[in-house]
Length: 357
Length: 260
Image (cartoon, rainbow over all chains, first blue to last red; front, side, top):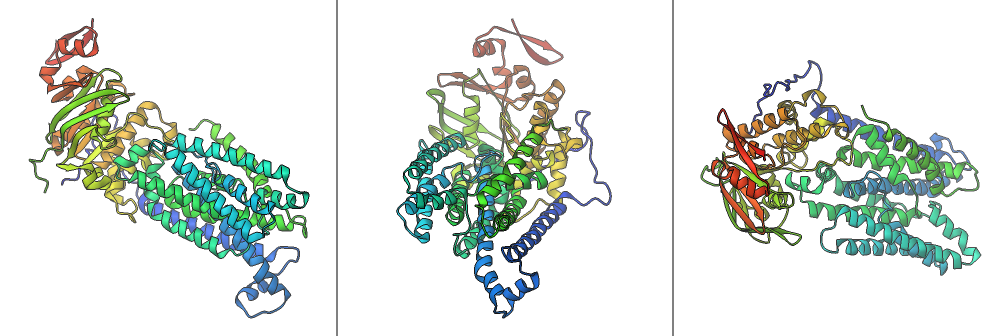
């Protein structure tokens, strides 16, 4: 087996040998170093946003007290607030944001569309139906979560089954099926809202807008976030190829059918978990991968971990604002992410529309 | 060491069809290292479909395709990618990426799951970019390239992949005349110097005459003819293939075909 060495001398008068300028590091090592730097920096940002989330609220708690509440044996009201109120909610927010951003990044590759978001395939619509039913019949928070997860799972199976159809499973077919199922779910949710008694309506609306106040135990969701990231990361370079087209990816050595199925189920699981935790929090899944891509390029080896960390931080900050802005009243965090997300997204679109180079 | 006797591409009783159109039936083809096969036919005759079956991207209706003596499903996509490379006809870039990053995708099958592209991979990708005349724009965004530049970039990625069997779907589409010759020279060099085998879908009989050792004509209705380039590329056969009268003109040992 010979390794082909392409003649680098100009063969047609137009090729110029490019020597590395002295002192410049090769892109190979610098790419990996840059990836580590970006992920490390975002990890620091995540810790900082966690610290802010734990300090800020209806009562501001100094950082030193937060630290002693978390790691020391302090036993007073403020350490109780930090440990049993703010920490679970902050971790829920982080997990939810990370899951949504990760799901968005994965679905953007799967659908080869930078504008795809975790809800485009109808998973949140299904979760909405399940959750609305549970709230409508007056079940408790656990049942609402169970209903949301079951609904999300059902929607995922329906879209997968219908989109497979003739076995082609093309992007267009998948997208169209998802959009239609989402529209159907939207109608179902609207129907339930219109017949719901007044005392249930507020809870239903908050769920639909995305709300972390009822999120409960965050550790399962954090586990899912870690599991999704760990299972997707080894395939990151193959995802890079998938984003360039199925056929090309296959001729370059990717098991395309297997990978696409895996991406679909992984992204669906991430979305379903996030939606179960916090309802339909919009724009994180769309905006965060997009921002990372603009800042750091489309290498999934950077994009996936960076999206998880940045998405987590963004939702954590947004939720802290949601708690603090008109404290002691709370805003639904989904409204805030949308308020932040819409202008950012419009800005990006306008920027994209400008001619390049 | 690779045994020189094994053909790089072999089809046995191959039948290919798409959308009710039968492209070929009982096609037996053996392509040895160094051979250059041109595929000619009208629009919609199924040239690209046949090529994608040869690339393992589509299932044949019947028969089998062997690369380096092995079936695609037996060796899996990764090993296949070390043997055959495929140049698609359309390059759609959904996401931004630099020219260098795009050339580097060709190195994927050479890397392990946890590997990052090494200095050697970068060097190979840069040499490939230099060979297609894109070295100076390695930082440009692919979405900003012209059609011809994008085509040459796809060729660079294929060169970086360095397969032994090149399956080229209209390799000179979008290219100006200088680059048509330059790119086909590159592939011929690979065949001559490295024992690669080429299969290329072409629309220009003069280029097939210049660069192919054998020619497969797809006539439609599952009729195919194959033979040496000199035998196949006559004005009479080409006129019949394209249903348009052509005239052969010879100059300094090269032949071109002029529509009458």
